Length: 136
Image (tube, rainbow, N blue to C red; front, side, top):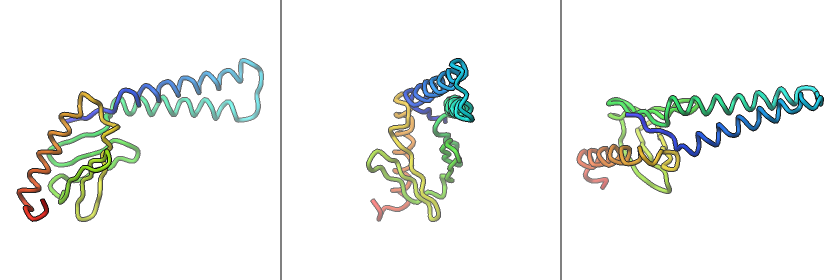
C-alpha cells in the first residue's frame, strides 16, 4: 500500500523550483553575470523540481506485508514484525523496535490516504496489545 504526500507539499516544491529557475535565468537576460550566482540559483530550482518529481512518483510511505518505509532522502524503513510499540502523540505516529524508532508525520499524509494509514495503524496497535496486554 502506498500513502501519498499532501498535494500542498508537492505544489509548493514545484512552484519554488519554477520561481528559482526564472530568477536564475533573469540574471542572464539582464546581462548581470555575477560569477556563479545565476548558476547556483538555477541548480537550486532544478533541485526543487527533482524533489517534487521524486515525491510525486515515490509517495510518502510504502507499506508492504514485511516493512514500513518512508520514502525521504535517505529512505527509512522498519520491519513490521519487529515492532514492539506503536503510538500516536503530537501529530506523529511512532513505531519502535528494540533498535529503531520511526516517526510518521500525520501532517505529511494526503487526506485521501489518511484513513487507510489509520486503519493500518489501529490494526497494528491492536495486534501489539493482544501480544503484550500488560502495556495497554
